[in-house]
Length: 156
Length: 156
Image (cartoon, rainbow over all chains, first blue to last red; front, side, top):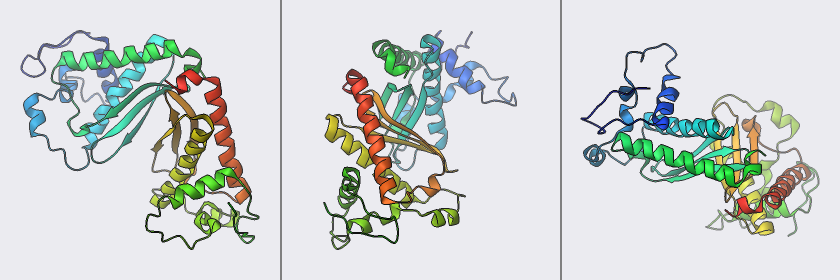
């Protein structure tokens, strides 16, 4: 997969299995092909939140449903990559408080392979493509390591 | 703990560590002592849903927040009994769809010790005290068995 350079926001685009998976997860929702003309970096644009944007984001009130949707897709992509690498399907559960903190887990069998306590959900996003890719890869790797450590629980 | 007989609804009250834990969980919320005069069976009355009541309950729309609260207390009581018996603290996560189905899990460490797929959340309740006690005990026993099977994951 090639990604368009977008130096203005998010810095240099990076090659990343995680970003490719995230694009695929989001394009899968586009059943009418409305986003066919969008580049991958356009598809993922909202995952980038620059330092300046972050400062201007209000953290009061319920997090935007679109933001929750985006966060869900982020963890869906992680679950799918984990499945590709281990064969274990991981399903997602979220516990979100309207103050913007919460918890997300990915569960494979009886094993919690990702458990992330969230603060600042209102500002979910990454400064650069490199940071988005790195955050995803790190969670995938940690999930795979957890499955390697407790394979029976993951397949229970 | 002694419980008052209430033959009319729920049949005969039973001695049960689970019911005692459930009463304790609910009384813990009564910080102003407003329920001090209530008997234990009054405290738990809403957990009983007779066959006739069940038939008359609508299953359309979002489940009543009080019902979700009650269900949460049910699983909180299970988590606390599991902790008493194993030393592993279990935290609860729910995923509830407004159509009345969903999933509840209790997580200890990296281990899912209870995982319950729910249908018919609108009608959450038990015909008798005996059935309520049995449902709770069964989930506790199964959780304890899961921890015995995967002790390292439960303590991870």
